[in-house]
Image: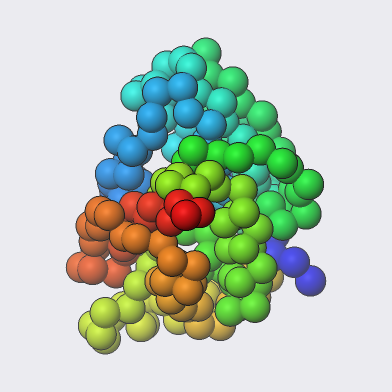
Length: 209
Ligand SMILES: C[S@@+](CC[C@H](N)C(=O)[O-])C[C@H]1O[C@@H](n2cnc3c(N)ncnc32)[C@H](O)[C@@H]1O
């Protein structure tokens, strides 16, 4: 059965602030300077949509954003955000179910992949990969284990909690960085947050030639 963040929509942001303070926000805001004016942007798994408010502060107009979120309740919250005069298309579905032919300048995947098994990661990754233009920018933020004992404890508790409440499938963190390496992405900027437990990376897609 597919994961469903509907059950957590009403408390998700409050819980994340309680555990991580502003680190979840800072780690994503850090990446937003890479969004070019007038760009075509794909956001997958934006949750309650606060990232749209932050994007609008930097780009009040001119962006074409596809906002894909599988949870109807998260999507309802996202629709209430300030999109300014940007053109947003809200798509309430799993990204891998779409038959979208758009080629995007930038894709954003904020804490999307930690939900997944290796198998789902591959499937979803490849779908998004094909939608990004050659030399396009992929902004990814997610958890990473760097050997500190408390990271493992926090990760295990988080995965167990969301497995019970939202039926996520992951029991461990899939190898997200390896996926980018396998598809020849270059990491051109990177910063860690919250005791290195959160990693934000700017990846550039290799050109075709
Ligand atoms: C861990 S939450 C992160 C939310 C938000 N990015 C944040 O940082 O607060 C992951 C989000 O991805 C969404 N999601 C999970 N699988 C998805 C899929 N296959 N397609 C689109 N959205 C998905 C979930 O509904 C959830 O809102």
